[in-house]
Length: 205
Image 1 (cartoon, rainbow, N blue to C red):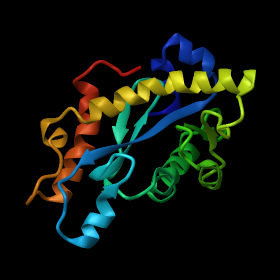
Image 2 (image 1 turned 45 degrees about the vertical axis):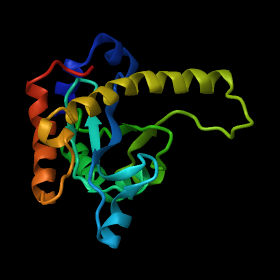
Image 3 (image 1 turned 180 degrees about the horizontal axis):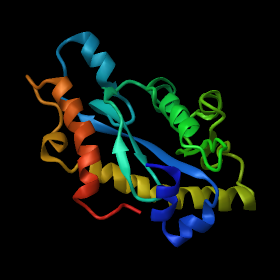
């Protein structure tokens, strides 16, 4: 979606908050898979966070309400590694270079959860920006600015959590990856549903 189209579709709150910013929110989610008997597949698909064998895919949301999905990867991949290697950062760089605003390149501002290590990857991909909740050691309290900033980001990312929910509503996807299923077909269904769902449900934001 073009920058001007996204701005036009934003709520008044997002128009004020992110005025002049090209914003995109990123998240990851799991698609359940059965326990593989092959040791390599078991290792590649087991995820400690979810406590199961799974595939992981990226979910993105624009402030204007449009959302979509990225390719499924084996579940053992970390969020940061997926973000760095999946290729969408380079796609965003190419898009921002083409969709200029008054002749100037407007880099993406990527909003992540605090678990991502994404600043360097974003900067290398066309000097994109990163916004995420502040992180602190367990024995240190947040100061006032950190608390307000983290709360604001968390509130905005609630829309992306709804995108994740919508992206998994299709029965074929919600049942998970079963024995004798084709992983290529599963990925195609995941990507297709991520786009199709925009026309079936109310906007997530």
